[in-house]
Length: 105
Image (cartoon, rainbow, N blue to C red; front, side):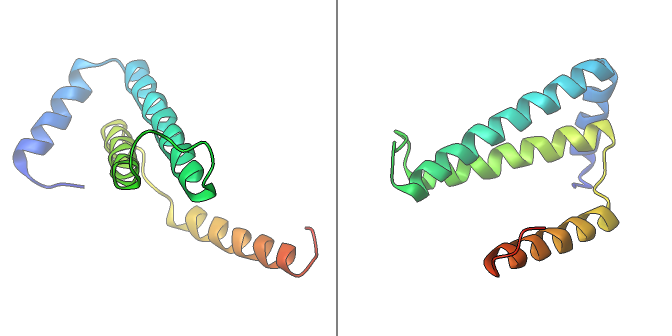
């Protein structure tokens, strides 16, 4: 998150100008765009049904869409929970380990 005065002012203007429902609509749209970018990357990695964009462009688009999500969340006031993040990382690690060991949890 930026502490550049002009950026802070721009975010404040957006928050004042748009209804809360519109901010959430923007967040949803950005999430959808990241999902589409991630699917294009998957197609590249799988080597099938390749997108017309190069891998460099797809990678740049992933970063841009994630940044759009982070900006939208920041304007709304959504913050990452370190506790939930850590719990999910641990659970994902346990699940992947269980699957690789032939167990399902």
